Image (tube, rainbow, N blue to C red; front, side, top):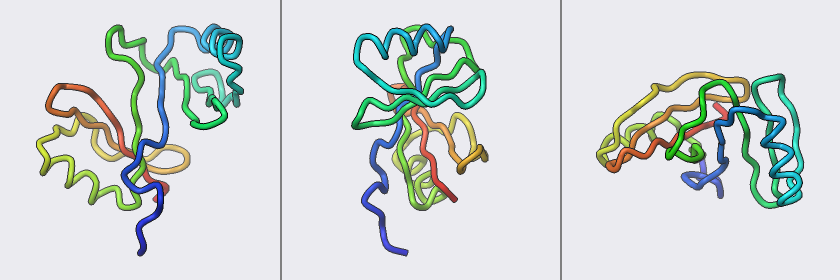
Length: 118
């Protein structure tokens, strides 16, 4: 399998927010982002260059910021690379509508995620 142009690149950013409608109002008004709702707990945004999401599944992370999500063609290989580089797996590989992902902590404690379509 050939490596895709998106392999191991930042692919998506997810903000945990208290109020999705308020987040949409702010970012739509301030920056002109467009939105696609996926139920009451998730909304995808598009800024014209990068897509991301707002979720209220967990409480906001004060000081934690958005969840940066990278894409990997081969999720298990990416997980192995994270561990070999000294990262800590915070959430193991799990399926979600559209693919699978895992979360990890880097050496400074920042949480990121990696996802794959398969």
